[in-house]
Amino acid sequence: MTHSISHKLILELNGSELALITVKKDGIVANIDFHSFFDNQILEQILDKLPEIYSDITVIIRRKPFITIPETYYTSDLNELFKLSYELPELDKIYLDKTESGIGIGYVMDPNIQTLIASKFTRATFTHEASVILKKLYKEVNFKHPRILISIHDGTLILFAINNTELVLCNYYQAKTNDDVFYFVMLVAEQLHFLPSETELIILGEPKNRNEIFDLFKNYIKDINIWVENYRMSDEIKHADLLSHSFALQALVCE
Image (cartoon, rainbow, N blue to C red; front, side, top):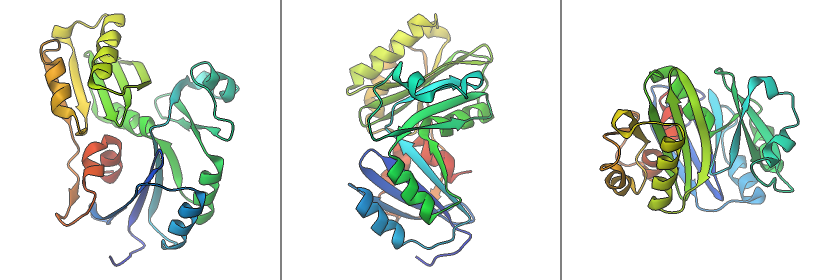
């Protein structure tokens, strides 16, 4: 692939997996490079081989627990807020995405990884998957009607609930099975008093178990839809499923 400074680079840190997506100026995905494992040393070697200049560099964090933080609490002790919901790994640091909707997403990341990437790309933007999806929802979704939107990936579930012009829930769950996904969605619907006959369930992207998830809910929630962005790539691109499975990646590619 011939490099151009107009290319956009997206790095996805997904647990111990790393994906690098290169997007042309016209929005077409030019290349997807995937590493099933990486550590600081491997990451440094990968970064050394990359060109110095891109038009835009985004680093997206997936499969990391997060908390939602109202804007009035941005100056609070983020460590203490995070510990109310999750254990804070000793070597990790809390990062905060401040969204335009007045809600922050606080999440953990290894500061050594952040430093390695930032030293290579000083203009790199770091963001959590939940922040990317929130930005998309506020831009394109009608918040008046009750909706539950779910992003599912490798044992994790991010759930968004909206109603009466407000985001009423944005949460992270460990959901190792389809039954776990069903339980958390129905629990949220019950707690928020969402009537199944009046609630829309939206599956974000195309998770590996999409059909099974659809079958689980079809007798309980009347309106079920799939939201996939219209991204473009050639048929020869390897690891294309990385994009189909991740709605957040699709949103970034199509910006």
